[in-house]
Length: 267
Length: 289
Image 1 (spheres, each protein chain N blue to C red):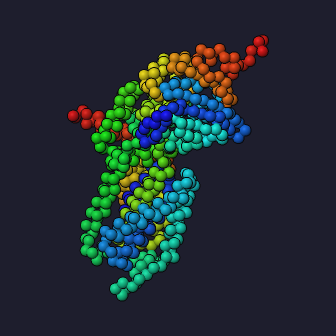
Image 2 (cartoon, rainbow over the protein chains, first blue to last red):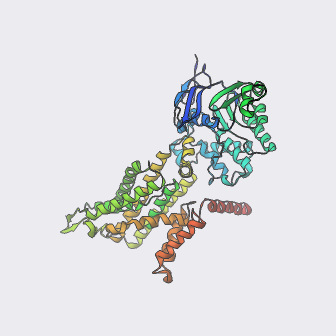
Image 3 (cartoon, helix red, strand yellow):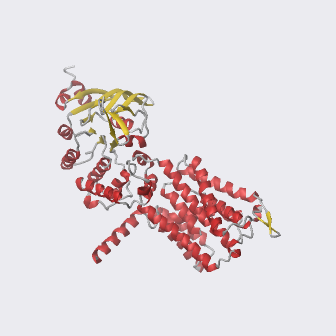
């Protein structure tokens, strides 16, 4: 097995990007995730769907260390990251966006992306306190470039709290992308958007995708998912009920049942 | 000098914690620096430095356990700590004979004869300049801080600690850093205070000083370090100097705080106002350029 260095960590090449093994998590009597298995190779874009309360966002929260798992293991490129703290997770190369938007509303759009660089490797004490070196200017340029790509450059001086919703979602995406993560978790990137805005968002996700980056997208808009994802995974009551190519998934009887209910006549 | 303690409370407000206890570090520094200059006759500047370090250290020590608390509980803990410090100074006696006179803290009678400034021939004008120089230095520090990543981290922690953790930063660690810096700044104020008045007593450091310092930040605004200074100017400059409000100052002050909490919960110069001013300024410059 070959070993390679990315940043400060030693990672194996033969491993899958993300390996979720048999994880469970319950809240009181509610089993939010039950014995879930999921393996993702580098570069895969996975759509995660399921009815409300099926455990999609809980899975994201478990992956990013917000919740601990009761049982099971999570591995990122073979490295065990089960129950790591949120502040460690992002350094491992996992970045996410939030379903119910979590921005620093009292900061400008530019600052919201800029602050995500704080914990990148290579930021030293001088950058932290004075923030005026040449390297720092380059980093600011990176933020500008990303804002340009995500179409936020015109409003980069506005306070993030005053932006319309589609822009706020773009801003969350930009903030995750500035870390150039290996694993990108998007929680309803087109939630609450009109069809036209959804299409734009899809185009943006496509535009910013890189071949080796793995991406999981939670979304209810099937048009967006079938356009972006090679693979879909369906959750219901914390269990995986289907996993495969979009075409197969939509025909899968369990999926139809979960979304539409059992067909009384055929059953 | 009040400005220092106001700035100290402001720094903690930035990281989202409300401290009623900044006067404790003011007191610790006042006593500490007074003692080293009066009893062991250290030079004045060493006394100030010693006071600041004492303030910073004690703030760090107190912050370690209390920062595990959140919100209201943190406020109560700081309040209790400050009262503890004040009551300790009420019974703290440590007197040494210097030049035939008893010098040192003497319980609730206070701590007299801190004469370093007079003995070391620093004129009142010089002393005023020293105060303003230190204040501008601290302000300069704040201005640099506001533009730096560190300053934005403080604001991040204040706005959403969990999200800040998710950006890979240790929120509690940065809170601790902010608390230490705040203690240090309060320490500058305390050391300058004791040397100006040559006398301190525990009564000065009661809760009202802490409440006021907090209110200065909340009145002036949390958008910029100038906010707490505006708060100080409004209270001391305006209310104290206008004759009509003389006896009613505390009532007017309380009303002002109540009004501001309703209409501008984050002060006159809050983030939005500062942002608006900044944009205005940039536009003006562009028109001229």
